[in-house]
Image 1: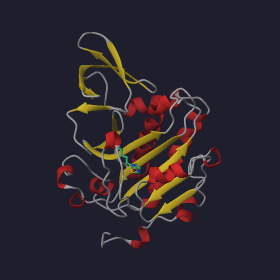
Image 2: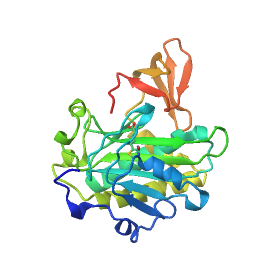
Image 3: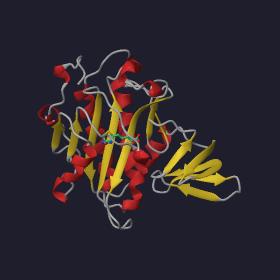
Image 4: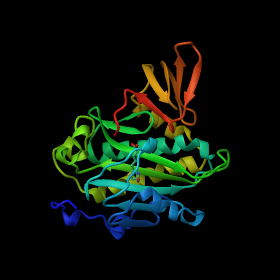
Length: 274
Ligand code: BTN
C-alpha cells in the first residue's frame, strides 16, 4: 500500500451516489478497498435488475487489459471502475461500448480538467501523446448475434506520479496530475465520468448511435494514415479508409481490398504494452 495515500481522497459509495442524477449508470455503486479485478466483481452483479451497477476499487491485484495484458495501478491513485450494461446490441458489437467508454473519459478530461484528449483506436485515451486511460469491454456469451450483456472496464490514471509507473512505461503513459502539475479530487472525476457514461448510454440504449459516432470521430487520432495492424499473428498494412462504430477500423489494404478490424484481437504496430 502506498504510504503517501491521502485518506480523505478515498472513494466512498455514498459520496459518489449523492445527487448523482444518472438514470442507469451508477444507480448502484460499490467501492472495494482492493480486489483482483473490478470487471470480475461487475460480472457477479450482471443481471438485468442491476444494469448500471458500477464497481470501483482503490487497487487491483489482477487488473487486466486487452489481449491478456496486465493493467498496473497504484493504490488510491487511479480510477478503476467497471459497469454492467445491456444495450440490446449483439455481443459482437462490443466495439460500440469501447467507444462509449473512451468518449465518456474524453469528455470528463475535457470538462473537469481542461485537458485535450484524443482516442487512439481501438481503446486508448491519449493526452500529450501518452496513454492516460484504457478501456476493456468484455462479453461472456457464446452466441455473438444474441443481445449481449457487457462489462465496461475503465482504468484512468488520475494522481499517479511518473515514479509510480513502471520504468518501461514512463515515456508512454501519463496521468491527470502529471499533465496538470497538481493532484485532483478523484471523487469529482468519478462522478463526472458516471454522468458522461450515463448520458451517452441513454442514446445507445434507445438505439441512436449517431450522436456517439459523431463525438467519437471528432476525438479519434486515426484517419487517413497508413497503419500496420497485427491480428492473430498476421500483419496487415494499408491506409485507414473509415472508422465504423460496429465494424471498427476499415483498412484499405495495399492490394486495394477493404478489410475491417474489430478491436478485440487487433493491435496497431508498433505497439507498446501498456
Ligand atoms: C487496456 O488498455 O488494455 C485496457 C485496460 C483496462 C483496465 C481496467 S481497470 C478497471 C477494469 N478492471 C480490470 O481488470 N480492467 C479494467
